[in-house]
Image (cartoon, rainbow, N blue to C red; front, side, top):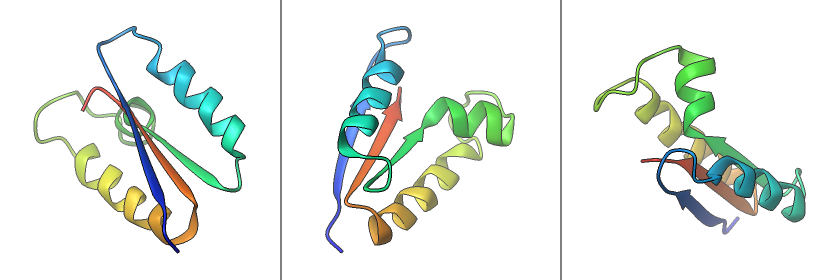
Length: 79
């Protein structure tokens, strides 16, 4: 399956998450995977925002998974 990657990045409090959620809804939840850097880092792993934290590899692996099963993969965060 050929997936389209959409990257939404920007400064803190620039409404990236809001835009990503709206886009996810518009594209259809079953067709799109939304990966939020903050959700992965804070809620799933509970790690601080450092250069080499565990979230980096997990986000990469989730994106690879999404590429295989979703039409759209939306990555949202500061990156």
